[in-house]
Length: 91
Image (cartoon, rainbow, N blue to C red; front, side, top):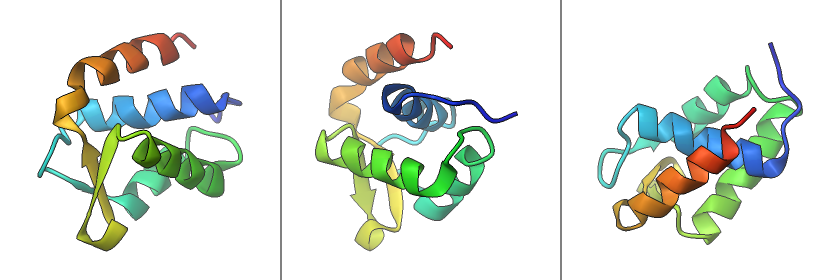
């Protein structure tokens, strides 16, 4: 079932998914697969998810690997990431 989420909730969903799967630092995950998995949950899926991933990259919450084809969580911001997820996952 798709949800109509705000951009803040979409970013929290992305971070939550990466946290639950242990994708920290050098343990990265393919970007296309992440977008595909989350597009089953978020309305206006692919482009919106990619835009929010780019915003998280700009804010330094996630790191890009392999020429931008993979992403992982920034371990130096672990406390901020968990707080962000707690705030955003109230839906």
